[in-house]
Length: 391
Image 1 (spheres, one colour):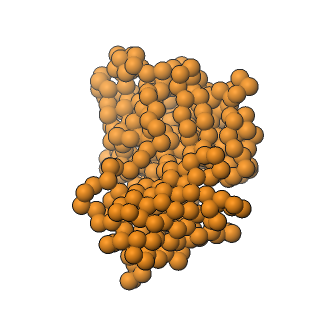
Image 2 (cartoon, rainbow, N blue to C red):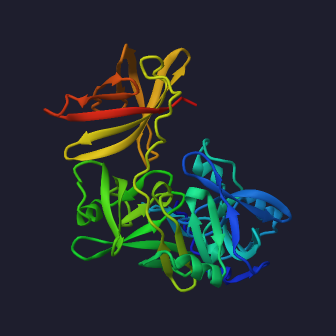
Image 3 (cartoon, helix red, strand yellow):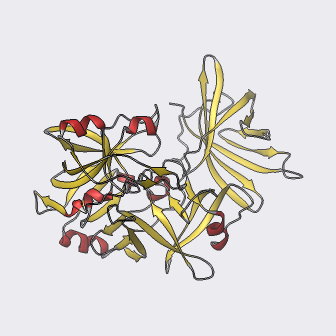
């Protein structure tokens, strides 16, 4: 999430460590890919959103009162669409994160209004600005952030691959974000924001998608990316034309690797990148759709000459079948309508403009079928495997 208050004072340099060893900080999983982190504020532990793309650290209006806010520099920022943000700032805010003390200027904002009713209750947001000058390892798959020592950082990165990164500090140096460099087919560098709180899919500008060789005829696409020689991946993404960046890497993608960053010298390393995640192997105790259609299915949809991996979830609500579908690695959920099961035949329609029918014929837990008209005008093949019971 891009909340960039340009803080006039470079205050985050005043940090001290209470320990000489690497400090592993647990991240607490919320809805989707949101994570929070425990922060000690004025003698009490509270939850703050953790957001590597936030630009600056933010405290709630209530915490600003508790901490005795000293008015700071004028606040100004820009969201990823270019929308300006303005707010007030508190100077020299003291927060304790794990064994680390951070003294930073902080923006003041009611994040509940911005995040919406489904988000976890938080008192503020911790950004990279709170870790300025530090050595960090982000392991979202294990829900942890590690504040490294020089020794632990050297040992960890010895098994990783260095990649290009830019540290952005905003118009007056009061922000801190990381942008990862991707190599386009023509050799150009494209810069994608490293955003752990981007709760939708990876976002990409149409021009950047074209330079990376992706099919830009659809708003949802699989993008081939190269971080370094021998380090490449396929990233499910959505086109976003009104964005001021080349792209924004989502938490769904960042979870596929471990990332280490030197926030003092502007260096980054990445571990091995896992393939697009799949669901667990088919367990023997899951009833096939003909017995009970509710459950979680892995789907593979053929769209032209590419395949899109997805998750189909069907539940029973008020005596009727309801469900959603989404691409794996993507939090953009599409509701389903007209769900029906007749013997071994499952049918439904995604609730999208110009909707199309999906029909699957199952043999046990595995099904094959078509979406749309099967491909004559608009459509293709789809396969599905029921992987788990409904929660």
